[in-house]
Amino acid sequence: MSAAKAESLADPKPVSGWIVTVSAHGGFSQTWEGSKNLSPFLLPGLSMRRPGASVGFSAPDEAPGFALYDNGFLKAGVSGRLRGPRQQSSWGELHGVHDIDWTVEAGGFAEFWTFQKLRARAELRHGFLGHHGMIAEIYLDWVEKHGAWTFSIGPRLTIGDQAYMNKLFGVTWKDALGNGSVPPYVAAWGVKSFGAMAAVKYDWSQDWSTTAFLRYNRLVGSAAASPLVTNLGSANQWMLGLSVSYSFYVDMF
Image (cartoon, rainbow, N blue to C red; front, side, top):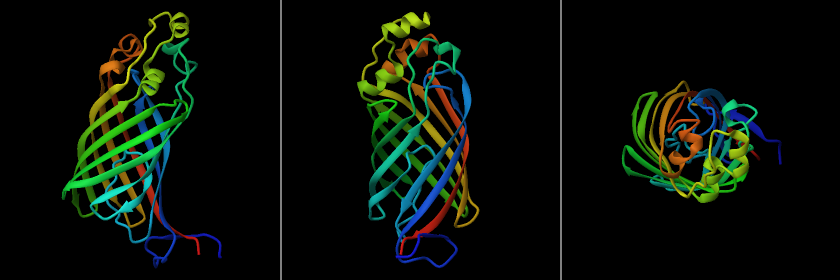
């Protein structure tokens, strides 16, 4: 077996291995979920598919992953997301409130095209390290492709179980005493937010692409009622940014 090698998509395609897409996503989002302030972010992305599998469409806010089943109409596989920490030492308004470490969310996804230009996608993930709850996200995207340009827009819905919601939006007695501006609060499971995403992608070549995106979320239910949001933050949540992706073949044989 020879050493692994990477090849440009413009090179002759190997008959085995994977097509790997690595991405860098940067921009501005809320400093912590429920905050009223924006701060810069930079996060990596990774996805894989078999040579010959359809390239398809992916939104910049969906969790990266790779398909285990793909018939061109229905696709399903594994996915994961890395979430940054929430630390009271970084944001003065959170003084005394419990920290949330870096979180790895791992799970799966399923998506299908209801019409030629309308994609529906659902993800279910479990958190590790920072939180240990379950989170479900539902995406609906209308996709228009014109040459090297791809335009997409659609609604979003996020649901969390109690472990997830209470970790992000709950306030313990210790938090309340340490902060002084928020009372104790227990967040319940349910819909966390609804919103919309719009994106514009340009393919510079078979290897390189750039995507600009804007997403708005409105916190609702138990999340919106949290004193962290009502007293210290805002129910209006924004994310805007730019991502750069590079795709290449990795042949293991």
